[in-house]
Image (cartoon, rainbow, N blue to C red; front, side, top):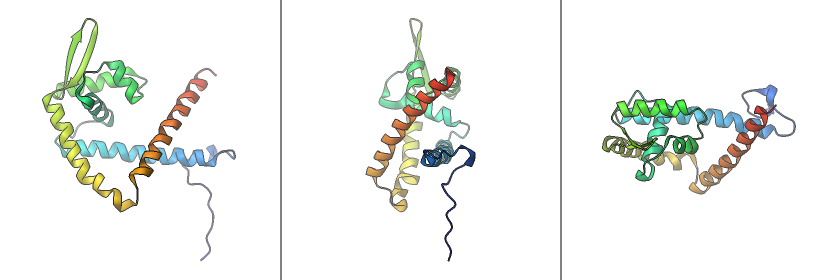
Length: 171
């Protein structure tokens, strides 16, 4: 059998740089991983009875439930790296209408947290996650150590992309 080298696996060959074809491979990997992750979190929440949530809604809900502390809109946007606050505001309004999120005004600032129903939804999601996702880790030959190393690398690269976005904005 003749093995042919087709080069890096990328989504946009015109963007491959001779200086770093690996970066194009990373971008393609992030793209398909992001889409798979978004599909997963939406389906995970649908499995626990919330079929009409967007990926952003799910992420905001879990962020609000994190450590059971109230959070300001700015905190949510910072943690999730959301540039357009309207996206987070829309998610909060939608989650509030569903009874999953509570809001409390202190002075001019609004603070948000999960309701008892929101906490229960997050816990039910966790159970589905354990059953469908965590239990499959060994099947793919991934170790927790490798996942941790990859996570650190992705956080570092996200900083690089944020800096590049700032640079591009000033061009």
